[in-house]
Image 1 (cartoon, rainbow over the protein chains, first blue to last red):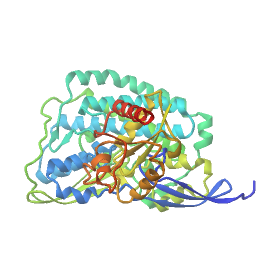
Image 2: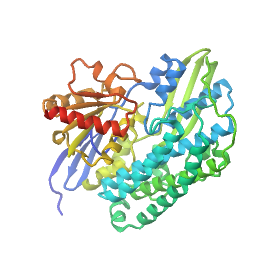
Image 3: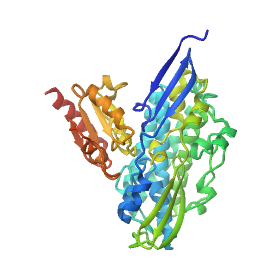
Image 4: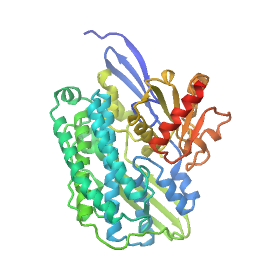
Length: 362
Length: 121
């Protein structure tokens, strides 16, 4: 095949394959990408600037809505920062239920991302199987918080509601089934030849590049970097739940897909462990009347990586808030991933990074 | 088959994934590949300043034949991100509004059906 014609192709900002708005201006030469210009900023809502203007309950309401798919992780990091600032203790039961909720949110996010990627690759029946699993995770979130998505559950010092004994028993019965379904699913996919042909050594982010870009979360772990806030700086009940982060070495689309699925599998095991020995007792949280003077910072591992809230209190209200979210696609990272890629693979490569624009551009 | 095209103008992503869940679970709903081929445009997000021109261009080109459904509270009035959504725009936007943060998949599916039925009446 010769060089072929050279032309421009614009994807986005509104595109069915990705959730948030982002635009890729591609320069295509023959069948390969000669150059790409990435445009973002469509999602910027100024949440961190708005937070100090709100009272604390309203602030928590907004924090929970910075990102719909990483909602609980945001509210958890925010509440942990307030707990630090106000010296609040969190009961063991609340800590365990926080892990359960965070992990169900991760399962929903990871299976959703993996299903989107499989759909992009034309493997719709596989995508549909995964959506059933995701739906179960969302139903579990509903049992825990009352909402399928965006759980208004976390409060400083504890939670807004408790898990009933009946719902706990239902979950304990459902979890082994979920576990088996996902195991069988991964087993069917792991040496699926057409999938391997389309994804291995496609859209590679080498470990060196991932280190240099400072990526977090699944994107880093799929490139062999063992970086996970749940073990690096354990919070809630993670320290006593014997958890090992998963990594994959390939750094390609296949590694990112497998990482999402294996992490979801690990999350189920974490939830089973947390629910099997769920401590009894107090779980209630309460929003403090006022914030003391001072600064506090807390982190949580969201579905897309490290989320950090740094708060400053002025003796009554929030004076300053800083939100740090995991690095996502940007100009350089997009160039690295898409340079010389086959045009047919572009959307799959983008989708495999599971870009979370709402987190990135709060 | 009703085909929908989603326009995310800076949402948290919650409504977007519940729209996806609505389409997966409804046999009469499907994604449109392009906005031109859609039977309904679904707006999510508070219409951020940087997404406004792209949204406006799509709306101006298509609103006379493809109806618009604003999904979720922030697409309606910007809550909780401040003033925004269709309420904060200079012009009046035709179409329906579906409140909720986020609305459930079944409410979304029903609103899409009603929108398209009204359009054909």
